Length: 151
Length: 70
Image 1: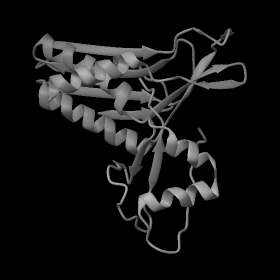
Image 2 (image 1 turned 60 degrees about the horizontal axis):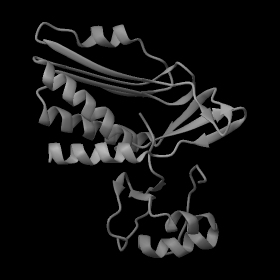
Image 3 (image 1 turned 180 degrees about the vertical axis):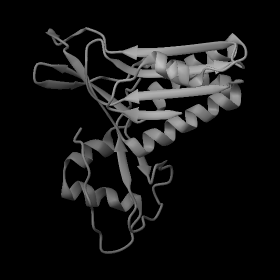
Image 4 (image 1 turned 90 degrees about the vertical axis):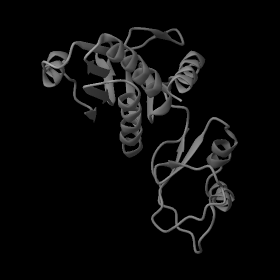
């Protein structure tokens, strides 16, 4: 399941949707808006936008890669867009498998890949200003590392 | 970078390569976009690898800066 939404989500509800007796392991990554300082100003939140058609396609491709490489029973990706305050949820990756290794590794793969290969953009909100968040070199390195792993 | 959508009309079929000067003439911001090596170009949700591809009526082109989701 893949969802791009302005609405928040409930972690337990999403977990309950994929619970079944086949699963021996669940892994999740939850990204949230953190308090920070930008240009000496406190960040009140972030604005997230996406190119929705492309983002859905890219998330679907990332999910397919994960399912192809690891033995997953379920794979959920939820990504929010719009204005989000400090502390709010941004993204959820939830995977389930018979054994823990598949769930843990695929979850890490999905969030690392998503950061580089899905059409979302974040902006820090300070006062009335929206400041684009720059792509990080360390994220690019992790992306390239995974490319080698799943090649 | 400027955000949003715009409908562009051209009188004849052109390649993506030839569309570039056409867009720069319309708005100088495109010069900056095309010079930025980190910008990715997509045609109907597929990354453009061949600039000589001929554009068709109704095609959707996207100019995307490096992504920062997650």
